Length: 332
Length: 247
Image (cartoon, rainbow over all chains, first blue to last red):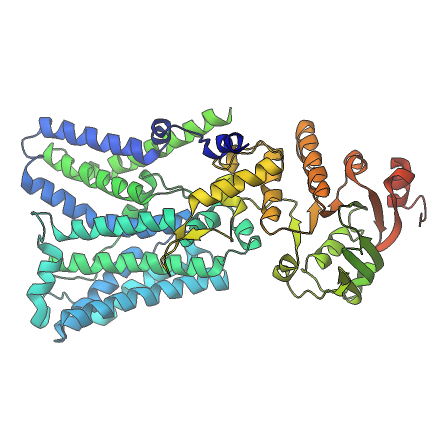
């Protein structure tokens, strides 16, 4: 009897290989590796330490936000405000530090701002019931406006007594010459991946995206989870803002303009489904990395940079149609 | 002693009398087929039992004790479970994840608890075996047949050791072979001593598994008799009003 029971319990739909083959993130990862190999041989400058350092650092800002966006998208939502929230948090950090406060206070203020904005979005979406698209579209406008108000639309490039600490935080390399932002990104990705797979919160995120009504009927605290999800998304934008401020060494009020679309593109290329219920932390990183490699390689290959959008767009369609065709085959 | 007794239960919404003075008893290990036309009050009556609505008049008793429900969770705590018509499943999750949704098993020290996949797969597998369903715990619900989905929804009620299961149209919109599967699930639950209220429009299904049949028409109970002493023709007459009542 015990043995009979073990068969269905242990039964898995896939071997690990076929499971891997069924993941969009895996195929995009292969495309990424292939592109890197191609570029290594096609150009002299791709596989240089300097260029790799640049690429890995450049995509972290998008990738960190893509982690938060992935969670939102798994619930079937969207957060259009992340670019503006990044700008606002950078600006709060910059203004607070410029006024002579130390870096800790600046970071607390920036993170606090991010959480407040996320909570505002989350309450309107989860408790009032306004569609996420609308709420976060409004916040896209509000947050950037607040950033302009906070700075009087000036560029801030002096960060008070802790100026050099901030620049090291975003621009330095603490471990083995890996830039700090990359380390933050890896840590955040591990936390996100763990949360999605191993916690009850993660399970609820997927359940809400799969069938929100079912989640409500089975007693999942849907509204609380959604509130948390939008706070996490804003938080990720805030964290990216702090890192990017340290890297750039200056904040302008058009920082992060249009970034939300790049983040959503990265998330979708990485396998998250805008209809909800599907997505991974790994996919968010891979999608972001691919976009950055495309951007970088066009420059190295001597192709006009204006083509970048076309390549990214093509990749969105290729990645999603891959998934689409696979589903069609399955349903036959 | 009856596991559930309804005594002169009425429920009205403003001027609309959805359920009117219905008395009903439900015994352990009994399947009661609840029939009636659309708007006859079946769903309202079931929702009263499930704690979604409070009755306007009348009383409910469970195992002889007064039963007052303010919300669905209280009904669950008393061992009353409802299997929804649309099944309330998440397609993107596994069978086991759906069975445990909202009641996940976790392991680990203190506040750092993580999902206990192994225990949930094991327990879900045991329940499916108990139900003699071929559903496998790790399969995604998206890939399941209607019968297997029904088994997942029913497996949920087994977690809480339900005493009464209310099933809303469990055989609507599934294939003939799967209907047989679901009906045998219902029989197995009954053999385990569970009382079942089966709402259905499908006459053959009701006659296949019910011990007793209750017919509602315009909120009133017009029949309550052993299935053996009724017939599909009589029930049709009772539902439409061609036969006034058969109590």
